[in-house]
Structure formats: structure tokens, C-alpha cells
Image 1 (cartoon, rainbow, N blue to C red):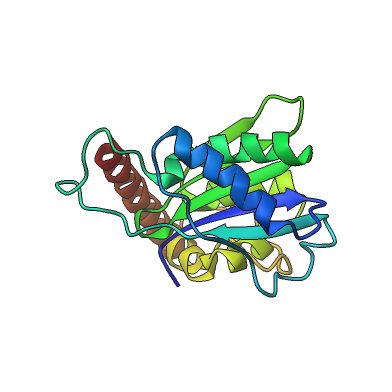
Image 2: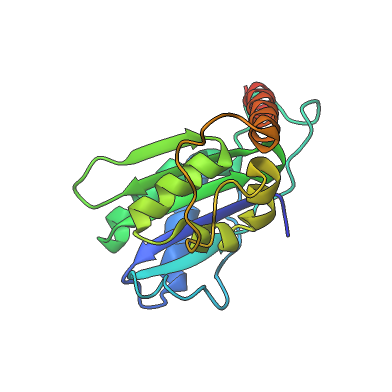
Length: 202
């Protein structure tokens, strides 16, 4: 599964992929980017449709190296907010976009609704996933499975955070143990990767 993924969640869409592509084409042409391929997510997890969402995945081109990329050339994922806002306007429904770069533990999500100001959050993958899941009104585990976040969660939190939603996790352990120190080290490493990712995008 690719490290970099961009998903769009649309409320109450009747499978109109052509209209979705037209909106994305308009957003990309405004910044001189080729229109990406987009398709509905096959076999979306249970609970997504129950919450009233349809999910589409936008195909991302391979990320160019820092030397190969011109400083003025935008990344497709940098248009996430514009995509969410344009889709909510065109479809007159709530739209949420989420971009995840698991290799650098970086993510960004934006939610937009017709006639409402959009909201965006960026940061570490797990924090952004939790916020996106709240906006979608779904379990974080559902979103993590869609984005291939299960392994990421285990690696970063060493099973200290339950993505399945079944087991209770103590919110305040009595004192740091070996697992806690491992988690803190991994989170510190993730923050360093995120800073490297941001520096590479400048």
C-alpha cells in the first residue's frame, strides 16, 4: 500500500464520479496541475455508508526529490483544502479531504460545508486521523484501516492506543514504563520526520 494517499469523503453523493472529476479538473487547472485519476474506494469499510459518506481516492503522482522539484511547482496534495471547498460548493454537501504521508508521519485534513467556513488540521498522522474521524462521525479504527494506518499505529504507539475501539486504554498510567518510553521515543522521531517533510515542501 502506498505511503502517500489522498482520500475525499462526500456526503450523500449518488455515485457521480464524472461530476467529481470535473470539479477536480477545475481546481487543478487553476494551479497548472494535470487532472488526477480518481475512483470510488472499493469495498469501503462497514460504518462509512451508515454515517452517510462515500469515499473516493485521488491518485497521487510519485513525490519528486527535492532536487528534481522546481521551487514553484505545487504538489497535488497541497490543493487538498481547495478540493474540499470546491466539492462542497459544487455538490452542496459536506466534504472532507485527508492526505496521509505515513513515511514521514505527516497528515492534513480539511472539512468544508456549503455556506460554512472550512476547517483544517495538520500534524502527526494519528492526531489528524482522530480529528478527521470526529468530523466524519466514524470510529478512528475505520479510518485507520482505510488509510493503512494499522501498522503505523502499532509502530508509533506500541499498542498503547487501541484502533479497534474494543479495549479500554488507561488515560493516565501510574508511571512511565518501558512501553511508555518506547512510545515517547517513536513520537519524537515522528515529529522530526514531520519537520523534515515540511522543510522539503518549502
